[in-house]
Image 1 (cartoon, rainbow, N blue to C red):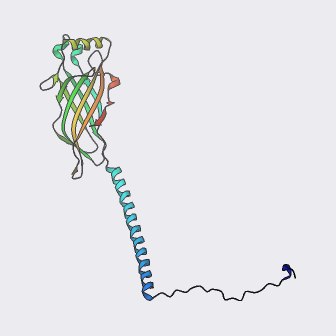
Image 2 (tube, helix red, strand yellow; image 1 turned 30 degrees about the vertical axis):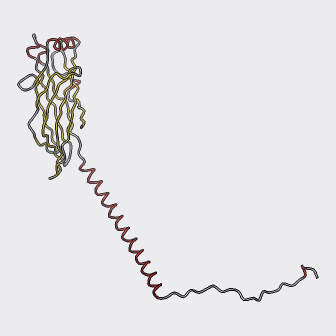
Image 3 (cartoon, rainbow, N blue to C red; image 1 turned 180 degrees about the horizontal axis):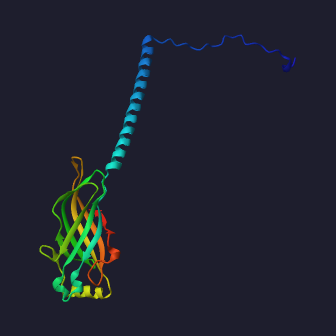
Amino acid sequence: MSSSDRLPVRDTRPQPQPVKHHHSARYYAQRVRESFTTRVTKVLCSIFLSFLLVALIVFFIVWLSLRPHRPRFHMIDFTVPGLAQKPGLDNAVITFNVTARNSNQHIGIYYDSMEGFVYYKDKQIGSTPLLHPFFQEPKTTTVVYGQFGIGAATLAVDSRRWKEFVSDRQHGTVYFRLGITSVIRFKVSTWKSVHHKMHVNCDVAVGSDGLILPAWKNRKCSVYFS
């Protein structure tokens, strides 16, 4: 008989049965405690992460509403009256006024000190103390007025420098730069910030009559901190 004609033989040997593990009550109690601890840990982590997310959102909203904006300065007037007079050197005085705007909604600004400087061709030719320490309320504007060449306000203009002024005057325009430095602090409710040194630079030009040219009126000045 060929191998293809053989009848299949049923394997009657006993098959191995899966081993059944019998655990004690202590084992199941341990499993229950571990499962409970895992669930509690997950719940606590979820609560903490939710609280952290809410706190970050609240902090971001408060920061957006209370972040301090630097003051805004604009050149209003600048005059060198001696340019239109002879001899002008005897009347070498410079007068100016700028506005300082606190645009913050809820933040006040303490100006603890303020000093002005005037530059011609990037050379400092004068300085003067400006305003006494003062507090600026939110959403208010303060006029800063000053003079160089009178009293404690110095103006170093010799005959050579004056000739340069006159030479520029003959061309119709004399360029200057007004600088202001101030030590300020921001105030939110009862909280006050540390001191910040603020620098203001205002480019300006006057005509042959010594008066500010219209194109330079109300120009915004640059402001930065150091």
